[in-house]
Image (cartoon, rainbow, N blue to C red; front, side):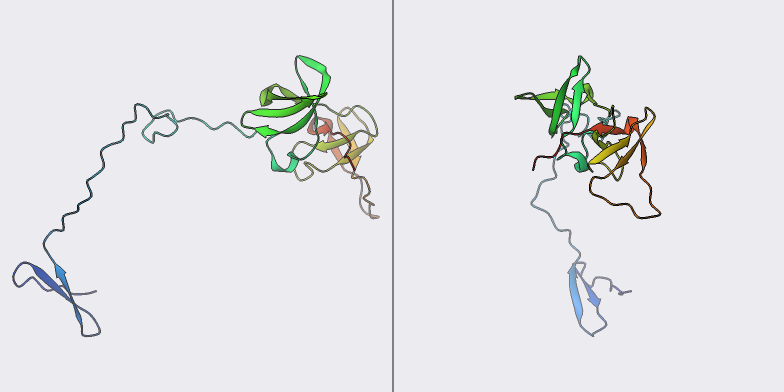
Length: 178
């Protein structure tokens, strides 16, 4: 602890240091030239930015399409009003997804899009979440409750078996273009 001497004349304090030197410190208050900022008028601010707000904006949960792993995957989707029209997923932009409908590219709200589920053996699929999201898989055995899938080109070892993934967690994908 550094002892501070009482001011001799009321203007300066000296602070002795361990090295034998001392620092001279003024006891007169320093006046700042920078004015104190006025309180922010929060009447024009959005509640999400107002820290005093009792009702800040709630962030929406992450939609299953808004994952980095599946952004470059050509997913098959449909809109609830037209379940027979298959759309190709292109990407997420805010609360909308860019999809291709035949030759037309359009924006559709995320909440209106649903995944096309596998329906038969040989369908190309990926999972909508988890470590296999965005990985191309092929349905080996279709079952309504869960499908046996395998990654094309992968050879299983003796002790390995093909995983069974619930059908509700799978979405069909378009074949990759080579």
